[in-house]
Image (cartoon, rainbow, N blue to C red; front, top):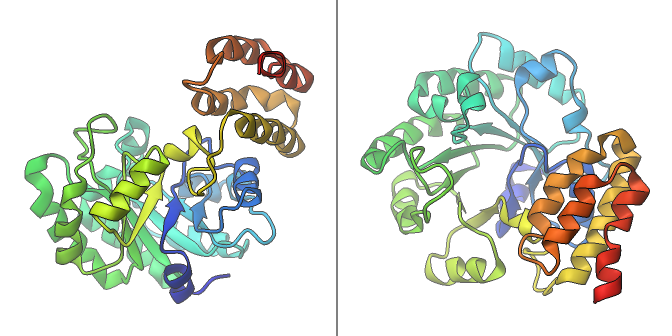
Length: 311
């Protein structure tokens, strides 16, 4: 397990966000094999899942540190205290994150995500319960506000959370109203940094290596959190150019690891990975048709023959 100082001192460059349905064990395993050494998170977790014993999402590999667990959901007295006690039974994660930034309806209706940004007292109750059972690394993921007129109010609210000694904020530099579409407001990074005086990871709109280089050169944030960019390019964190053939090799390994973890019956869940990974690549439409018609492991592997013949 990594200490609070180690999380910040050794892994301050790039980290990977929790992505529901994507940062599963086989995907994380491959990221490590291909050289990612920084902090990443498992899938986001609702405390009620943990309470019911649904812990598959935190099936953490040996020697997977640093790895974090993100919690989302509303406040109920004693729930997060119980959640932390159950999580500690697994004992192999390094950091806990509270989701205060997701605008997806399902998450907001659970009382989590940006609901907590709006109702900051509920966030305080949750963080108080987490801290009562966990003195290790703690982070908070959020957004710059509900609208562009809400920026200063967001900063005031986030200042109120500093009493819980978070190690860093990961801030998505879009508003709740904007969701995921328009260009993020990276120019506001300096304002949040100066006001909050805490380590801040910049998040939102980072889809390729050139963007990472641009952000480092022009904004020089404490660090960058990757989200969907890692799905388009699983090698975005490295100087390696990657390329189509490397994506194919990555995909075939991913299929093998997925079957080893979850069996062939769940292979349909891998289709969304390939939709991201091969978007814009040559023959992507034909490849997608083959993948979406595949019924077993051999047929999924056979879908790649289009590239074996054409490249």
